[in-house]
Image (cartoon, rainbow, N blue to C red; front, side):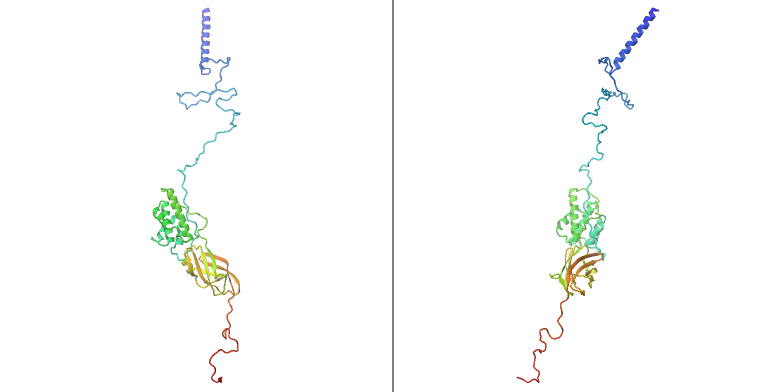
Length: 355
């Protein structure tokens, strides 16, 4: 009986010793008992990661600070920390570098305005209007003379060629560049000058981006290339004219074929339409001077407007000049300067006696 009691006591002592040893090994993962006055270290355990490989080493659990926060975090009172603040994510669309930036389409032709083109025959003004649509460059090239001498035709041909080249549809940069150099200062009309400027822009684009092609787009609005107007009336210097006098009417910024204006145009002075088509006095570039006869208006003096119409176009100059009464005509009868009652000198009548 005494032996059995002794064996039980020995077994209890062995079990207790084993428990103490296990606690010492697993208490803080260090293998040594805590020396801090008998209180064990508290270890926080995060949620298990079931996707982690069984052979991967476990990440050490952070120690808990006396304030109850896991070590490694920043206290709200720490400098630079704001409650609830998060780190700003990087921009989803970084600024493109110069190498991948989209190329901007070169500037294209401004509005003309559109020429009436009454006779439907291609002329530089109407072909300019066709080129306003960059998709019509090949069609426009087909109606331009092959080897034109007129600078207006030459600049349009060079522009149509460059238009095809910049869009990758053929054309010739060399031809366009050669014509651009040869036409410097030779385009005399507002549409011609606008075409020359756009041609220079295409060549500049090609110089900076030799292998690039772009889809050219026409501007939907903007300042027209031409500002058509009656620039003045030449009455001889004093601003007055009599019925029957010839007056010069100067036009500037024409955006249509001058030959069509001379066939189909009309001129009004003081609201009265003149008979017949306009008569050309001189022409230079997009300007011309018409020669007109002042009509009889009935009341004088009278300040008159001058209007030139062709198709849907109209140019007006208000108070262009003053029409005055015609000069008084000499009375019929005796020649001017002969005193009344005095016969003109001549042979004496035969029946009169001599001296």
